Each structure stands twice: as C-alpha cells, then as structure tokens.
Image 1: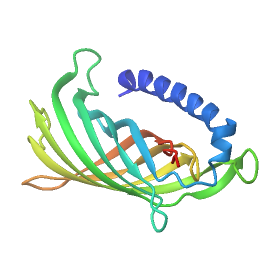
Image 2: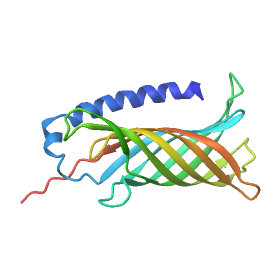
Image 3: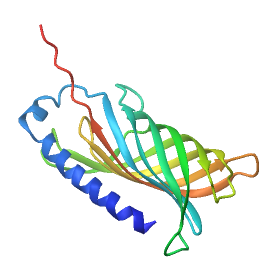
Length: 200
C-alpha cells in the first residue's frame, strides 16, 4: 500500500495548505458566521492486510446538517487490487464503489488559532454502507459485495472550515458466503463550497 500512498499524501498535504490559507482571508473570516452546509469530499481508501487488497480514490458530495450529525455524504470510488506481498507487478482488475456515510460531531481535544475561529483537533466516528462491483477480481469476494464500516478518525477542522481526517477501523464485507472482516484505512479531506451571493 505504501507505493501508491505517497503521491496521494503529498497531494492532500498541498491541498490542505491551500485551503488553510484561503480560510484565513478576510472574506472567509466574514463568512464564518454563515452556515456552509455543502462540501466536496475527496480521499484515498484502502483495505488492510497481506496479499490482495483494494486501493481506491474517492470523491463525493457532503451535506452538513444544522442538527444531529456533523455530516452525511455520498461518494464514488474507483480503484484496483494491489498484491501487498508483491514488490512489482502486483496490480490487477478494476473496482468501482458507491458509499453512503454519516459522521458524528468531533470530540475536540485542542484548538489552534483564535478562540472564536480556531481550527479544532480531535476525534470523530464515521459509519459507512458501501456497494462494490469489480472486474477481474483476484479476491474471494467475487464481483459484487457490500461493505459495512465503523471508522474512528483523528480529525482536523471544525465548524465551517475544511475538514481532514485519518480514518481507520473495521469493515465487514458481505457476499453470498461467509462475511469477510478487514481493516480499512482512509485519508480524507472535505472542502466547503462557497455560498452563492444573493443580488437584489
């Protein structure tokens, strides 16, 4: 998994720096009091273990409700199977997925910046229901399966600001046979969409 994670981590780091800089502009500060309920989510997702594993990029829409959960989202995934036991040539097939997710509010443990508009640091939990279809799958799951995941996360970002998280937890894959339990690791970002100004 390390071979394909490096460019993803570099890209996410660069994007997080850009978003953080944008969030500190006067326009962003003046908009902090306004709810930004819509966001774009993106990330990298991988199952954990030896031999064949799924690695995929994801992108989707995130809605931040005014009450209840911190966010609900719908995302699409596209990836491949990687043989973690192989140094070279360990890639095969294509996997597509759709994921419905719900994230709890963050339990803050620290905050950076000003007290009112600082960036929160803490933990939250994401619940996911996913459906997958694959071509040339080398795994015993077959060509179609469902996934149910409970994913604790270490997160950065609160309120209307961009949100980033390192997510890891168990996921159960359901097929026609016995359920398969795997670990799942994800690096995720969430960029709020700008509010459209109303003209008289």
